[in-house]
Length: 289
Image 1 (cartoon, helix red, strand yellow):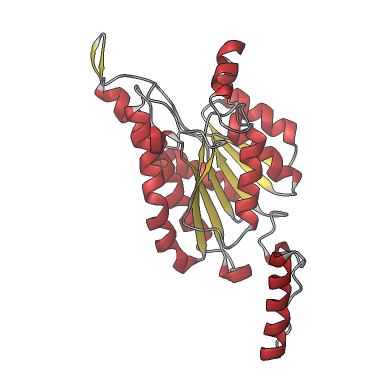
Image 2 (tube, rainbow, N blue to C red):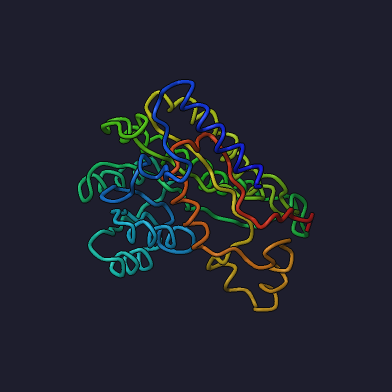
């Protein structure tokens, strides 16, 4: 006898007998009451390529409408055209208040109600605190934090204001915000002081924002990817990519943007996920260098 299934079944039946309540059988899928992405509107920063582009594809395939926000106009326009009438593009700098606000206004004009924000935009420069050319450039550190942390927060605050006006759905939910952190927030490498600090900030603000926006029915989470097949990594020599993949315990390969997108969709559908940072990294723990 499978003890786990036996205990599970006994508990359900006992609960029914003792309370007289109708309880859904164990095989009932909870997605029936979850937020559906069909006919919903989503904004994806950094949506022109990489993780953002993969997420946009999955959302459109599921019947959602998306606004791709990116500085790369060629990439964003091309992807929007590829995805069809349910995809739109707005060129914007997420770290600039006015630029981001214009992008969200464009979303409202073209799509309508905002149900989800997925922040994928970011920069990842490498620079040592004490390098051959002297101390770390302060402007480089500031720019990394400005884009990765302040830019993400800028989009969060603007999106939250839009979502708070939505009619509540299942469990009173009005929207979902998903930021992209990084494993560098937990085990950053030499040369990643600015990047790790910026992504560490994304991790740190997840829970307090989730707690605050709970009153508005808005869930807030972050995904911390490991080494993924982004355009930057794919531009490296094949042997370098292979070496990076072998650093991952299992599966011993680079992460795929489609896997990031799949996790995003699960977060959107699973209404009990909130205030959490989820590592997507094949159990990798980065070495010092």
